[in-house]
Amino acid sequence: MTPLFRLALLLPAAALALAACAEFPELDGRVTPAAAAAPYPDLVPLPPLLAAADALGAAPDLSAPARAAADTRAAELRARAAALRPPVVDPDARARLAAGVDTSALDAVAGQSLGPDLPAADPAARDAPLN
Image (cartoon, rainbow, N blue to C red; front, side, top):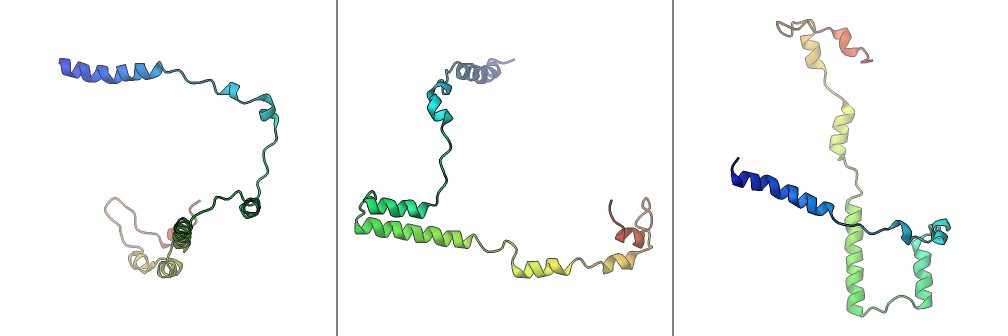
């Protein structure tokens, strides 16, 4: 082996060995017994919470340009979400799928040999269930 090839094998092994030396913090002891025994919080709708925060004056006062920028961004996000809602399959493709498969070509070759190693096509087998 060439020295360069040995170095190429040694560097990843050394990096892995150094990464294995890292100590992870003990996270299990950070949750108090009272917090672990507490019930999960209730899931509530957001609009009443925001209305209550506005009533308490907890909402930050935004300048007119900042409020306009936030409103513009919200409108852009709503428009983007609306663009993602239409059906995935357009109406033309849905109509073609609903029409089914044209099997007239299969009827034309029914009973003909499909090749030297394959038996003749059996029209009854085409309509038979697969299970």
